[in-house]
Amino acid sequence: MIDHTTIHVIAGHGGTGCVSFHREKFISRGGPDGGNGGIGGSIYALGDKNIRTLLDLRYKKTFRSESGMNGSGNNKTGRDAPDTFIRVPLGTVIHDVSSDTIIADIRENGQKALLAKGGKGGIGNARFKSPTRRSPRFSLPPGPGDDKQIRLELKLIADVGLVGMPNAGKSTLLSRLSNARPKIADYPFTTLAPNLGFVQVSENESFILADIPGLIEGAHKGKGLGHDFLRHIERTRVLVYVLDQSQEESPKEALAKLIHELKTFNPKLPEKPSIIALNKDDIKDNIGKKGAIRATQKRPVISISALTGKNLKELSYLIKDKLFNGR
Image (cartoon, rainbow, N blue to C red):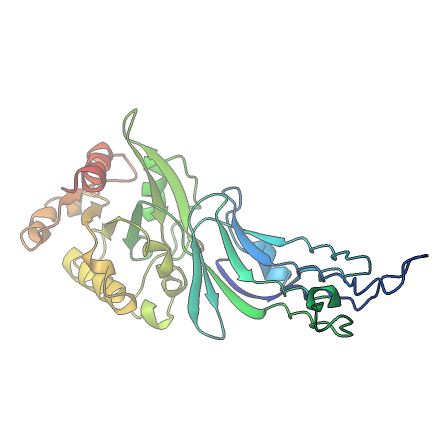
């Protein structure tokens, strides 16, 4: 999944203003009639719900708009150049590299954001005619278009994020709760990119669920795959900590490591409403581990089996209550 890239945007220059004097048979001293130049084309980002990644922008790095047409005699203004639109997926955050500021956060289909403004057209000499200056022989030069380096960063728009260590069963859980079909295998880091799934709880209640690649200790420093994708859970409203009960490490220790990684990446992440899902409850040795962690947690704790489907309906209702009722 391509979720970040940098592009170069160059807006069009304005057209040159014209220096001209009217010439016509039987009309002497027709006066200045130089027209203005056209406006250069601007460059915009445009939100498109049909685009999922920034892949297209990974290979096309430079976007350039046309310049405005020059003005001409007989008070003719040059044509304005058309604007250029760069289609981006919803959830794209756009940064100006030079000033390190956020230009826009594209969240809606059809939302536009100005990346580079086209230059103003030059002013023709007809505009400078006055009773005291009847024959101006000059024009104002056109303005240059903006020239910027733009960084685009995609943050998936999902209601709920599944967070856990590698092989905790997040992908299996996503496939059982939603219509998503992520890759599932019995080795770590099967998930190489975030996956989204649509969960229909009732006729009028549904939510988008995101499976984030497994986190390991040190993910906030770039270890494993988690660091590259932690940004995708910044938009989620609820987190589900998926803990593997079959590991030698206790669920309580695994949860502490997950929360530490989230907090180091963004201190606000652990403050989100959350649920603990103790997975692989179908394994006999895991039965009864729920009580040990529930005693230390204020957040809801539920034992599930993504493999057999045990308590998955109850989990979806817990998530729904967190999302829509704030409980």
